[in-house]
Image (tube, rainbow, N blue to C red):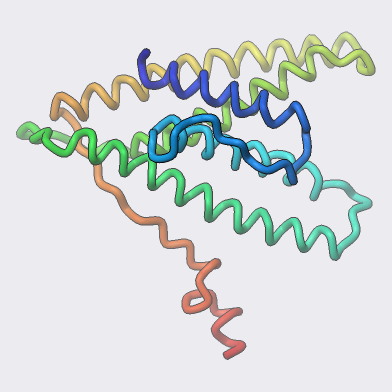
Length: 201
């Protein structure tokens, strides 16, 4: 199975597993072996799926401000975990292609493979939820029609992004492109770098 087909299959499984309970506090039950790329992909999408729903909850105009703050901090923590998972997935690619010698004139891509996979994971969520909108019975025909049009665009976008990822991986494997892993330096989460936090010391 090509890599992006595997990604899309795992993302659909993760999203389906989450929506059986549809609760942001449902513990993850990753079905794939620890240490495998499948395990990382499932975990990555599970984080995205929970965060998707936290973002919905926090936009309730009647939400209690204390609850909203707790969710905002939970989203911040989720973003950090999401970034960590992306870096783990890029680590998988770095290890896989570690023996490849870049060709003369090889170039670096604008993003790493795992950050492209991150976008693929979010697209899977957009497709799932837009599909739900096309099936609602409490909205107008115009709403469903508009959502069907948007869904078609999202599906096309997933096809195009999947192809672009496959081409990037083929280029890295052939030495036409090379990758670097820059650890994300999220300053707002670091008490030594966030001025609001270190000013309190």
